[in-house]
Length: 193
Image 1 (cartoon, rainbow, N blue to C red):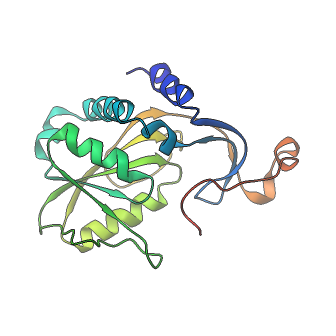
Image 2: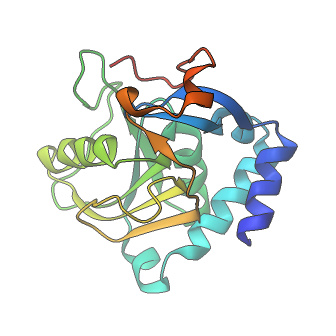
């Protein structure tokens, strides 16, 4: 899929929002991608996951034993990536602020993992999720995401394969442009801190 085709899927799902948003990173933006909306249609989610899986080098695809994604945003795309790659998919949760496996999920020592996210902005959640995978004995080979909002700046420490890279401006809370500061901010993401 081309970038335009991917964004057309977001627009068709009313998932490309405009306003004043506080991102999970704490930064502010006038654009927000509501991946939950684009993934609520199973056919669309499968199509996007298949396109994302095709972005991975063939040799990498053949090495992956397991897909792991952070809750909440990564659950659906992680599940669909597991299907596209023919491997199991599980997710990490943060019941008390740090990522951990629950629900009987386990990573076998030495299992080769593809971390899958919906959106990467700074890479903080990704790095924290990778730490949790490594603490369980998994080997993180790479990360894949529907959207790279970092404009290629996120340092994940592993190869990174986004379906689309966007360069929407983001701002610190004390450096908002006037037009953005004039709009009430909302925090649509799942992370509270």
